[in-house]
Image 1 (cartoon, rainbow, N blue to C red):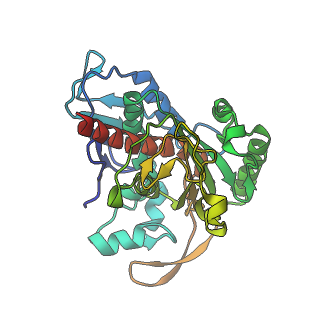
Image 2 (cartoon, rainbow, N blue to C red):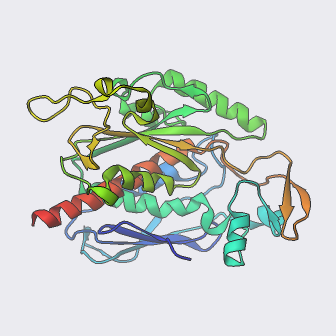
Length: 354
């Protein structure tokens, strides 16, 4: 299976399955002499881990990271950083009913057709548990560029949206509620709706908005390696993501050029920021902001029609522990992927400057 490595200079290669012994990864390209705050890395994993609130999957995992290499006396050595997070609370029997059954909107069918084999226990490699490695690598990346601030938050659940621009929000409130929405009134509505959906045995989607601030001018390469293109690839590689837009996004398609153009200030900043901090694929020093759309979780607790490996029509119903809405736990994943993209271009820029 190809496609298990992300990045160019700062690279993550990940491994492991949802119901295997462990999830892990190797980070290569990290500069030496970075003093790592290991507690901060663990804190990011705690934000992603299951069982943290009543509105997420109740699988109980400590998700404690163990570093195997690349760190000495609290600092990075410049060599590959190897790490693992052990799986301790698998309940593989919850998946015994789908040994030869393909779950609707999951990767079951395409995996088996492509590889001739699949791990039906939680989806194996296609499980969102794989994102543990991304969170670790992203947490390390953030410590390479502490001056750059990356804040993601839940901006919608179903048809419940924050009706304020991000500039009017206090990002310090994001972690004050289980939904991870910095607008507390909207957060209450979102949480109530998720609980209602869960009681119905169903799931719901949502969006996450991410804001990256203090980005220097010049990150990104023209043509095929545009900064927004790499951010888009990073976000679309996350499980359940169905859409990505930055800056004015699809709303910009309705506007005139005279309305959309970001006019300059004398210092090179712009009066508006419909470009989303990126012009010509290169950061312009303004805030980078984008939105990521997540579909409803495919596993629902309602009976559905599907097919088995013999092509027969059968009935199936989800079992086990699943998120009724993925977006609250996906916030640190979005931040992690954004951090890896920014660090990759940051290191590339420094090479050119050298």
